Image (tube, rainbow, N blue to C red):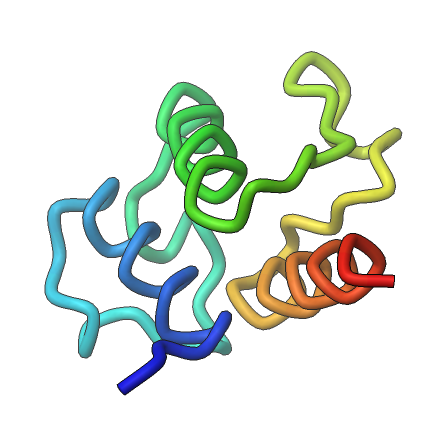
Length: 88
């Protein structure tokens, strides 16, 4: 069975937060699950590798990035957008 973008992103975030995927919801923020800035960078690298995409993210100024990290749902949405753009 193919995993969805949602499932894969949640698994990556859960792994980085040392949680079970069931403990990470789409409403969670990275802060909610205990991911700090270094963990965020690790998540971004893992997402890029998992989906073979380039995430336009500036770890030094996340508020200036086009990649919304405000919640798990926003990260999933941003990854889905990048994946769909890649397949065009």
